Image (spheres, rainbow, N blue to C red):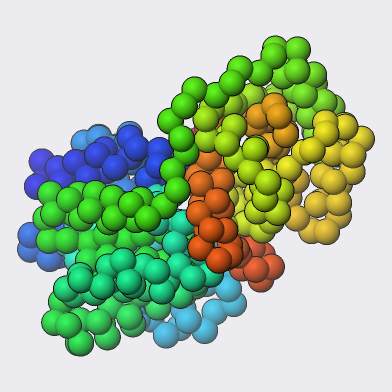
Length: 386
């Protein structure tokens, strides 16, 4: 096995098993070969923890991956045609013996501009700062001793535009500091860690997450007070009826409850915090923030779902019912992902709110994500489609 592939499997599994770092099979990793000609990268739709020598990755020619960003003809295309053209170009850059139709990560052309080992995650600790109105200033103070400093990346549409911006920022950074950045925080998105070795990248991940968490409010580690079975069943039946009436679709309803959910339900600002989508992940997998339910009335909830659809949005699939818990609509495979996204979201919202305000995606940014074929493809795979 190529050492680069062995390193890719190592960093992928080590980070992929931690739900505070990734949700819904999200995040991606890459490692460049010693000769600088190739890059092994996670395949789109693969969960990091499932990476193996046989599946979950593609090997790409590094020069062809980089050429996507530099091709001026792509930049001039209409948005959706451009993103499809990028998918094709990234597939053409693959040079391996993989027999499946697995796509390389849609961010492969971005990874091509970073250091040898790249770990891209959506950690709740990083998200608390990336989605806070004062997050950048707080991060720069928190990491002021880093040499060279962290790189902050203002929100940019994912895909080609983000890769192009990263390439420009990294070239400027390298010119100024003589090396590539090791820590990149992406506004409303996540975290990139890069290093020359797999071990160095993993150590830097732990260091960054630990430092971020040291300044954040963590859920109290206490056992939640039990909720009566009758109360849960009544709320579950109510949500099931409301979802059917509001969307015209039948869905199985799943119930979740833990200390983090209990504490958020008791937060007096909980309802106020559940406005707007935080990240592409929340929008793609949970259709936006969980719906706050003060009182479980099926007609009222159904009306709210219809209003979401009528206004051009997607209906909520997660419901936080005051005094009861979290309910998620979906299949056995997708419901745990929705749960993880909600847990990630309420942690970020609680901390960003404490930092002076929550920063969410605006309407134009949401529309781009909702119309982006790459995200639709990723959700299909996460839902169990082949």
